[in-house]
Image (cartoon, rainbow, N blue to C red; front, side):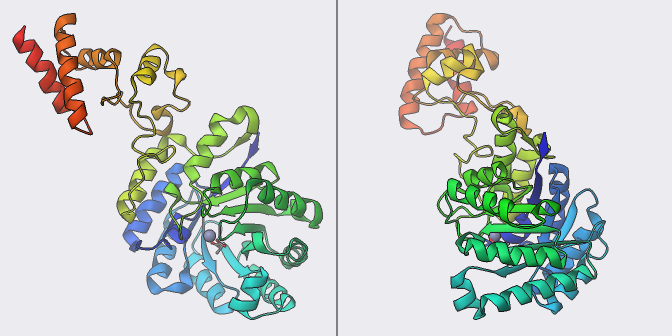
Length: 385
Ligand code: KIV
Ligand code: ZN
């Protein structure tokens, strides 16, 4: 089975989300958890961007040994030198250099011609390779770049010594068919593409980051980049837990594997949410509070007869304890009785019916029926009997 490398950028692209600011101790705690989660590479920050980021990247590089640690750099020697100082203590020093290749970025942001951009990228990669054994080069806004220009510049940076080529959809504009086709095109047209790692990096502006990332894998990506809980600039990056679980649950069609320890997903997600302060939407795939909650009577009845009727992923798979069936106004008698028994109440059918009527009345008034509410309802009937 082909193994897909997981490049985690929670601490760099993720931290770029508005309102997030992690200190070194918090970053280190997340990095250690990412190591347990099974990230192949951890992008710990952007060492030249601030003394705080430098310190965090250095601490993580010197501490984390089971994942490769990297830092982001522009194509300037100062950034590469600073990154080396931060990363030289790592097991396998890795640097991530980026430069934009789309017409809009080259004309308006960089104010450089395409050939000047090629020269800058090549010089930076050659310079970095004098120190770093592993050099990733990213074509920022690759998806909106001219595919033939991408082929040209990628050929040149591979010849300059890049060991990984990353093709980001920086603004989340791609559709799965288009993004997959770009990977296929690069695989077919770049000389030596099979000697380097090809990486996908998707943003979620149109809500297509997960589908785009999977399309890249199907078309030859060896590595995928994303964040825990999908945090990141604007609508965020692809959520790594979604990719890891999708590849696992649908191995029958994909046939790809990762080193992610699925049992660590819930813990990692909660730690990232707690330390960044970014609340996870309740219906978020895999890690949302409601991801395993079944409320309607028909679904609950099916679940009690055979959980596979409505559950394709078990909470235990991601390290979450079994979630009791949610009880609310849509719930049925079957789930209600089941909960009474699991809470230790042995009520006659008549008493159970009375409790169920009282429960439905309460559920019409109250959004969430808690364990305490149920306890009172069941106890009332027990006392009456
Ligand atoms: O989205 C992007 O293009 C990036 C690059 C720096 C890789 O995050
Ligand atoms: Zn990005």
